[in-house]
Length: 316
Length: 265
Image 1 (cartoon, chains in turn blue, purple):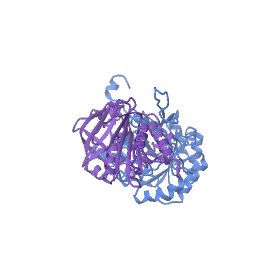
Image 2 (cartoon, chains in turn orange, yellow):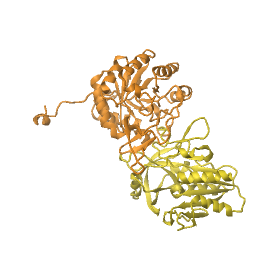
Image 3 (tube, rainbow over the protein chains, first blue to last red):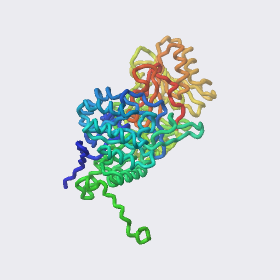
Image 4 (cartoon, chains in turn cyan, purple):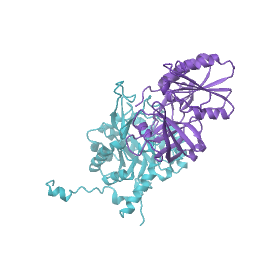
């Protein structure tokens, strides 16, 4: 049985559906001893901004049951250093590179994207309109539907490459946001960025992270993320990149079945930087067990018909 | 080279009040490990606690590794309950080792409480390179002092005077130096609570002494990909250093120690 895990979106063919999530894998170059990045579907870079950013003061992270809070504040080297130093190194290790861009205005998003357009070796872009941890990290965009629409339109006009918009779950109706992205020509939506979360020490009555609230991620958010992907699946027909608490192949399969075409692994990489290829192998094993030869058979194959026992019980 | 491997626990033992040692073997890790580096360890395979825990390597003997820890939370309680043969998921060695080169004759290893962690492996490495080694170790009281007869030239200090000098560890350093008439050039290596590092930093600045510190810091990944463990730098072209990747061992003059968090979850 010949199994294909390839997925093509716009003009990028991903060898498997497992990517690393932005901000959880550095620039893709930090853990060569643990993972061969060419075995990933792709590497989504740390958010790249126009200028280098120091990031937020400590404390930036806190562990929670089955999850964690972070408030890194988009610390990054800036687009110039990224293009001159990080990108060439990523190309050498044969990574499929998706550049995540963060900014505080449409002009700034456009600037970073246009700088990237001058360089070879970039598969596409993921636009971060959903960082909860800095005032200008895009969340002011991400919770404003007309602003997301305008930004998508402006960026679409500037690139022929894959353009994905990374959405925040911290809105009433994520489907409406996905819908405007689709209408303005986005190739995909990434669902989801972190939930806003908070934790405190009861003895000192102080917050556990310096910015008081932060982005909540990890296995704990998986059911909420899956529900967001389900909501977006019903709202749009463009591909979805599913993100949220994925740690195992089974987790990834859930997102694919609900309707994601690709998935991203995030917090799990902090525990095992090599989790991406392991998850990709687990997906292949599942396909073999179930006689599935192409991922397209799996994507969106959720069976929502009611169980006979439930019908008998009057649930229909 | 760094490794991610599952080893088997050899033993755990309580070496002072609420202070435990866990031992295991890894020939691959000991071959590349250097003093001051740490290992990032997953307490068990569950999601709670989720993250790895960073531990300085305490001792190495052949392929044997010892780590030392307090039991103060979910993760360390799981470590303390480990039995011989239990699996341990270990990543490392990580971090930049102590700088052992330089012009000094005597290494003074200053530790407060669990700050003793990197000192035995450091002391042995210095001794092998021909340096004199002195350990000055302090804790609140005698029962919390890690008394280890393998420590080179140990001097103890307790806050309540129940063992060694009745003083804090910085006063003990002062006491030692004031009575040391060897005129040897010294380098201090310190690890312990941030308050202790603060006051030792001030003491060393006043006496123009060379001080290296090993920082303890909550981390998520341990390898620089999450950027969760910043400490502010006094100079250089970037504002923050990442303790996991650029540390945990620093020249104290490079750091803004006040930027270290004072409370851990």
